[in-house]
Picture 1 (cartoon, rainbow, N blue to C red):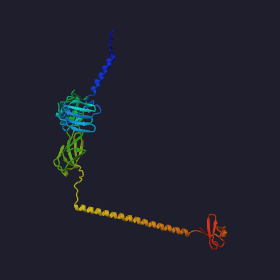
Picture 2 (cartoon, rainbow, N blue to C red):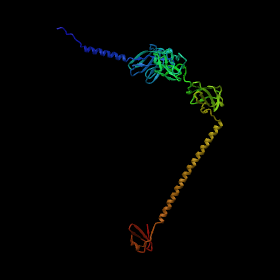
Picture 3 (cartoon, rainbow, N blue to C red):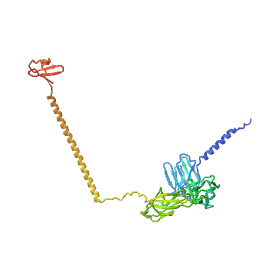
Picture 4 (spheres, helix red, strand yellow):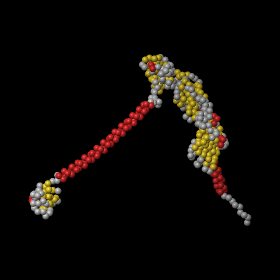
Length: 437
């Protein structure tokens, strides 16, 4: 018989292919890589590393695609923490604890390839990534098709001049408030054109802004439109007070001799009449006043009054001019003469000696008084002992009345000891009195 042909199961082949693919995928997923980054001039740039396994011993970053020592920027050893700069370092580069390359105050010539080498316990891996630093565009420009409109009737079209192509980074503002799509507002697809179908007298200031970096808005100069009203008379609606220096909470802080300028405006039809009052006295009919060189007499309270003679509406705004708050100055150049130092030392020494003398005198007085009191107590105890012996009670009881019996064989009429219950009595020579002891 011929040798039989060995046949392999198709399932076994599929398992083998799957194992090979799994190993290949694992190798690819464990390979480190650098995430490309687009930054802007003057801001920080970051190059992050992906798929970094545990047990990293050192991160080394290089400029270009070569990891030679002459191209090294900076290296970082996580444990113990240490950093070392290389020949290509500009002093603006650093490495985070996760191996990220951080470049401060990025410059246009920072654009290019960067290589990282990561050292492990059992080897090392390298990866190359791209960093692009772009020039931050200037503030956008703005224009409008008209400069004046009739309130609630005429539309206006405004245009934002910018090179940004991402529509989500273009924003529009009317009187400081951000706009969104509504019945009164329409945006073009790239949001570079704004159409406002109707305007009120409060929608006079238009601005557009670009947001290159999240949270950083670059606003255009404002366009101020003239809005006419068909109403014969209206306003004033409010009083806007602008000053130089800036007014904070109704207080304008300025030094004597400095220049102060204040301007008072309002929205009114017909145009309102303005006048200023200083410390209760009339000052000027102008909308703005200028104080070229501030004096003490010009300090105090100012009030701007706006009045519409047709509507008979009057409004005002107050401001107080005063000197800036001066924090107390602590002198650090205090000094004393040598004689005063010597005198102070002598006084301190004499005072110390005097205090020591008082302390010694108090201790001696305390202990001597204590010994005297002890001796006095001893004498008192002695006197008490003598008094106890002298004051021993005499029992004036006769031997016959109490029925005493002699404790010894003494004969009647002689001294002897007699006992009665728990006491012992001594008779005198007459045999009548007994002494208790």
